Amino acid sequence: MVKKVLVVAGASGGHIFPALSLIEGLVKKDNQINLLLVLPRRSQNVCVIEKNIKVEYISTAVIKLCVSYKNLKAVVDFIKGTFESLLILLKYRPDVVVGFGSADSLPLVLFAWFFRIKTLLHEQNVIPGKANRLLAKFVDKVAISFDKTKDLFSVNKQKIVLTGNPLRSSLKRVDRLGALEFLGLDQDKLTILVMGGSQGSRRINECFLESMAVLAGRFDIQVMHIAGSNDTDFLTNAYKELNLRAKVVAFLGDMQYAYSVANLSVCRAGATTVAELIHFKLPAILIPFPFAYGHQLENAKVLEEQGAGIIIEENVLNAELLRKALVELINDPGRVEKMSRAYEGFPSSDACNLLIDEVLKI
Image 1 (spheres, rainbow, N blue to C red):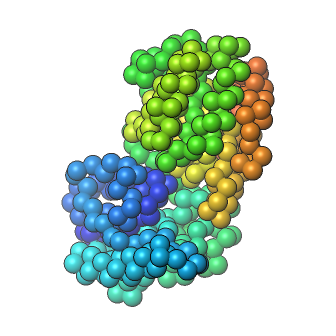
Image 2 (cartoon, one colour):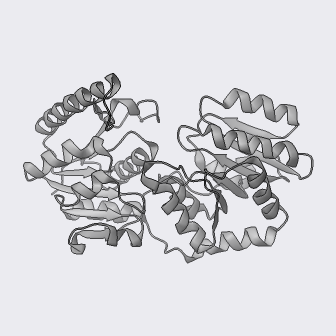
Image 3 (cartoon, rainbow, N blue to C red):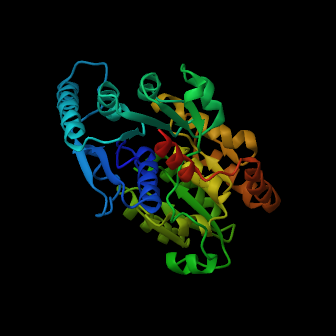
């Protein structure tokens, strides 16, 4: 019987949010299970962890192939984090270790394998990260979010299971009028949801704002903009100058309200964002983050190929191109509705419960 589960994740919201979803689901499934979440210290500003979740922080850091003081410090931190991971494992003695990717999870998952503790990996993206490609060779089970990911792991396909990407239970569609009131937005306007990822995106924020400078007077629209901490004040003031109704926040924990009011979105294509777009069937203009091994571009292609999204790559992104894409969608409600219906082509799955079942099975 599983009594203790240790969950380890990287520093980004794309790793942390599904990890939190799993923990939340396990608590509901069996409140006798003892759960521990392990995160890198640099993740502490990414999101707020509820007080009822036990968390340990480790000192791992991103190591780059260059010679610099910063990189030397990263190597020292990684070594320190490796020892911290070992001590946590020996102290906690879990029955199962679940890794959600990134190099931060490498030491804990490998130590778990060495001590013959059952292990499961979850891959959120279409293209597996380097850490998960390596760890897949050692773990007992690999859970994936997209079917095409199966062929990208060089392991026995019997150990791979399609679960989907777990979402928080709070992410359910709410009454639109209530959500509009909660956000302070108008009832009769077309609502565009803008998101630049967990840290925000200056490039998306500026291009979208420049687009709105032309569109604000032409269309009856309003904006729900999740801007990141650096651009919140700047965008709030800019929308006021444009006399455009907008709700601007650095971060929104209650994302169900934003998704429930939006008619379309302009956003990145992180794994969690894509899973949420699928869940809420929200048409999107996708601007994938161009780095991190092209993960987001491949995620975005899943939506574009289904007819639910339009990709604008960042290397060609400008205000005119974004404005043109927005005008085409705003002028064609039938196309927006068709994009929303395209999500019906995705298989529906209860990703969190499927993942929980795999954890408990091993």
